[in-house]
Length: 329
Image (cartoon, rainbow, N blue to C red; front, side, top):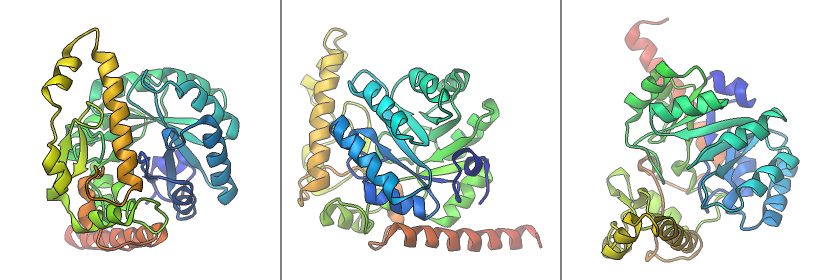
């Protein structure tokens, strides 16, 4: 499993443990790094700059291997600039930018040799961030958890590889070693995997959230706009069925009004964050739990190391089967 991502981020395996809002924590980051992955944590998982400072220092005290931070770079994140400079001061190795222009992050990071990968869902934006100087692209496909794209990996990855010279990392829909092999066979330079790491021993989410990842599968993942106004995948629990997945008429009208749209989106996003926060840390099924279709392969609570070792075994078994089929000796 050697690709351009190994060299770009200095990791053993071409896999990023995807940043998960209100799920990824310091213990998960350390465990992922020690297992050979490139762990990435959302800056917004730390409510203040002081908490971010303590959190990154805790992670760096637990591992000497590369770590990354996910930055929301649109106007809704009023702490973005402070988060950026705090992370640079603390010596993080890479950023993943989401939901906005990465221009300032790329400009400031290049001064210190810090790598920047950018979430993209289609070709035009991929070319734009490449022109801005991004070091890699996170190709968020239709199988991703949370804020997903609309294009399947089988189409998105080859399409981006045809127009971009920088590494393309596929994000979404993979929860096995065979799945990893399939994405690399498509031309991906690595993978970003998140949902399979929710139900881990290192995760601090509730046992109910973890149990939902085990009990539910790909057919139970639905898209809702209630959390942030932007389509987001969640587990279709009884509570989600009860409240529905579409914004109500008032929310829709507010989001269509040019003057009120920005403020409505901020209110919706804030309310959504509070729902997610409750979902992550309150033991109740009357909550909203983000996840992607790859929870299909979550059958028990394991450590991150155990999951990674399983991926390795499955990868090489799948590769042996492929070699047998193709006649490779």
